[in-house]
Length: 248
Image (cartoon, rainbow, N blue to C red):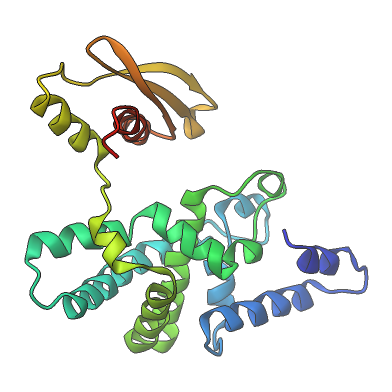
């Protein structure tokens, strides 16, 4: 939590309504729009860890909004890419959109915009580092709130400006995301053994595990990766292996 917001909580004469008002003002500056429905935008910033508090019901976190925002974001990204690359085929556009709206990219948007500072978390979660997954989800929930209150044109303007400010599209389209496929293609071309991925360790509680995976080629350790799923950890390991082999 940022210092300016923490100071508001510490002041005894500062009401919760005043704290909410400050958060909304900051969010208005970020999205460049007047907020007409404060409760909706506050919900867009509210993590489910707050639901243990009796003042909230089970649907009062950002998760439903994230679902809608995901769909709106996909459409906006498709429209932006369709206009930016007028001769590109469907396959190129589909792959480029996947890179543009992936969780890691959305989390970066949230970080750059300062959205992380405005999140409402449960007491325990406030002590933890906010994950990239949460940052990505909240970016989508804010898009949904804009779409609901202002319509598609306003949502499009917000997202397209973020793209314009933060995305190097030429770098994006040349970016390799499927490191496992790239490693497989390289090993096949070089007549090497196929990559073999093995779980080295698992840590964390069942709902929040972190996997450590090693990739072997020709019985040699070429890279280790970590992630909250085996798939993510394997991709991370493959990325390291490609660097080890001097490919990327």
